[in-house]
Length: 208
Image (cartoon, rainbow, N blue to C red):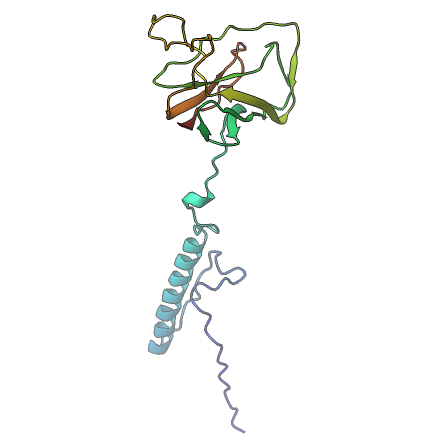
């Protein structure tokens, strides 16, 4: 009786499909000396090389594309400060308000001996208020995390003088400081404690 030879056909896998053990180095079985055997060996070698290339490429693919939107803007400095202002446009003569936010990521509380943590002021062209420094026996404990320090600042020219000297503006006849001229100013803050971070300035627009 003649025996039938059954040919089993297997669906080819798409290029790049991950198969268990497909990326490991394996030897190709030597083909028979027949032309068809050599042809099968050549085809198998090409498929094997393509599989290795696909494996090496997929190992270098990033799962999350790099883009500007994925880059964080959090400061790398473990102890930093920044302003949070209620209104950056004020009428001359009004008081502004907001907070200086201290971000302590050092892992331990920070102690400050400054009587007032920060003194805010408006500056224009490098000219600011020359306010006296206050000292006291109190201590500030800045815990780990965020600490919000409330602040207020004036749109009056506290650097006025009774006479025209040192390039300062004149005070009002009653001795009170005049309103700041309408313009753009920089809100800054300073502290007697040099270990405290300085918040970046914020632009404040003063209107008539």
